[in-house]
Image 1: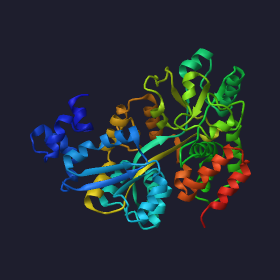
Image 2: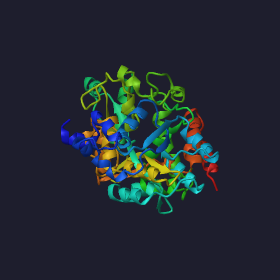
Image 3: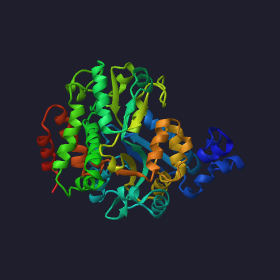
Image 4: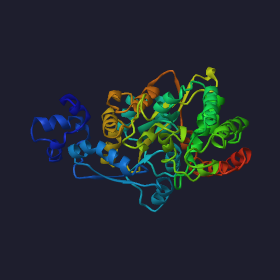
Length: 439
């Protein structure tokens, strides 16, 4: 890494102490702290941050803002929790709200705004979002036209993971249409291997991987306009188009000839953790696993993740070529529960290309930030994700469950899809979710 990149990407470790002392211990320290000059004046303060990002991923996140802390003197007290979605409302109602939360669901952000808990974004936050993000990404973090959540991280969900080495050895070609994908599935099954493996267990969020399957498929069968109507509840949750899409998903996820390679039958899908869902690909006991770009975190370090390696991903093919290239994705939004200046300063920084670059370097994390230096991303899948997010020919839609009211998107939709995997018929599962939609 050259010196110019160091100045762009972060504060060298040898300069952290100098910056923390005021950023005045020589020209090198001053230059390294220059990107943080606009956030000064709050030294000695602390900002508490709460999110669902934890374990190794939490370490990568906190590394990404080390320079901000060192140069501004603002301490960040971070907590990641597996129970974030369920616990945050209770913390807010009991007066224990964090200063800043990283929301993976705009629907949960909206509910916190409606409850009067989240503050409107400050002027600096709005300015950064207007400059560095598309109107759609700003809309995802807004309620009634007012910005409350600044976009931070992003991911692409329309991927199928596979082994290029295994495909090459077996003479399989990466499918470019849905029909080809099903034909390949039949061929793999005929060769004695279950073509798909899946896992949807995720603690209190069990079931969410199926919501992604349904949303990706609905985009490909009914198109983005119907998708938007469904997410916004302008058509019923159990609209015939949604029933048809879920039945199509069932042709894969509930097909005993197709799943669950490496784990057992269809019933094992509900009890297999999403982190482990695709791992049998490495043992060649399954061939494909539909999961988001962030799944790259869960492959062993010894696995070669590239176009010719042990693991890679292909774009989930369209069903109707006339529908173009729909892409389902998601992201994280920073919402503040206080308008204290140090909190707004951190929120503004999180919406900058500098922070996006830090996330790329420390965690190989993708962002929809227009200023992201995509060359900093370490893996081909991350670069492919960033390219798709920036491609004007792609029809992008945000994860529907994340946009829905939290009681549905992070509640009955998850439990309903779990019941569906366990055998509840499609119409009944979707009707129950429809009945749960808040008035």
